[in-house]
Length: 176
Length: 433
Image (cartoon, rainbow over all chains, first blue to last red; front, top):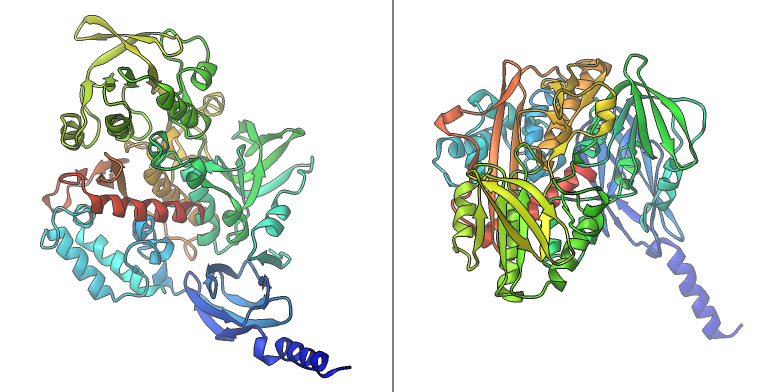
């Protein structure tokens, strides 16, 4: 074996070892039922496959080339494997039982999902996990005509009762 | 329910999609909920039934087409602003892969509400499926216009293009082929029809396109209604030249006859008791619409559409059958965004009925909030918004905060156009992704 070949073999060994292995962050996480979390993936060689041990417990979707979203469906545990051509990295996901409060206001708040994304993440401003006081305060400004009275958010907010605006704000603050 | 782990490939949905498209077995299968129709309402209800039951309800989605093509934004294909229908095409793989919906490609030929079963047919045969709850989201059927002899004339000669697809492409090609110094005639049926602002939007974007491409041609709108049905001030301004084109808008026109001849159609109509006619190089008749024959044959119709309880969207005529989207009588506009929210109201009710209040709370006073954006040129758009509150069995435009509903943009703008693209993308994501 000449030196050149040996070097190539060493480089190849390094590539299949720790330097070029798939890494994930975090390796364990807890997400609420109805909520979601993000997993960062790096060091991928070739095509990445996602192996979900419990697709009824969590839903995994790709956000971009290095980011995956994990949505909690039902209380339980799931192991998510990220497998490339050489290695597999695993994330343990625990889905917590939903708080009863998450159901209150959910259907009402789902009127916002068409523009602000399912669960209030996506599209226009993110609503999931924002402070209830802040969301309610903003909606009241729209409803009273104090802010952008001819805009589409004023048109929406004006159609809801005060109690309904409160319930929408409480819902979005209770989810992630 | 136990289910094997499955692999999601980042390269595509091929592996998991394959599992949902296994050959259909002849013996009866049973699901908690069967959804019929994979449009805006049907896709949304399938997704939210799975999401809100935390994956525990088995849900089948029966749709004959392989893909859904969005009606929303399809007027932009007519003018070439969107290069093709490709950007408006949605697959069902997210519903199957992400949410666990069972996708069945075929048609439903009959419903037996008493025995909670239906007959499902594919190219290779038919079988009986049973359900606890059935959700019908079948869209609409289109009537023949006076003087027409066959629905196939819409496919070959005078496309209505009111369901996006091949007819959209045909209408586009007719507009391209039309010589200058011609009329494009659009007819609008009496309300209720799908998408109240849609015909006026179509008149605007075609007139805007003609301004550059066939500057001596014009759009004539023959509206069977007495007035513009949505955003009247904005459309009237557009028709009067606010954006550099004009539309010849004629209201209260009852269409009496279409005399069809490729490139030289004649439309006869009666306006204020006087019989008149116009010629059309391109004729786009938007036909009267009704709930599909399946609903008529299943005893679910009163008049042209299906009456429902607006708390649950359950038929008032047959128990266990829910009807959502354009085929039901909701008192609200027939439109995709509204179909999406009717679907959520229905999904919430069905999950509550089948899984109880630890999964979904019973709703006794639903609110339905609608938004829709409307391009009036290739770069500018307006919007229409309405909030409906449930009251004594009906959905009424909200009167909260002293504000009348619906409400619309004060005028068209480029920033509205940018917002329209975010709205459309997010709405389709909430429905199909």
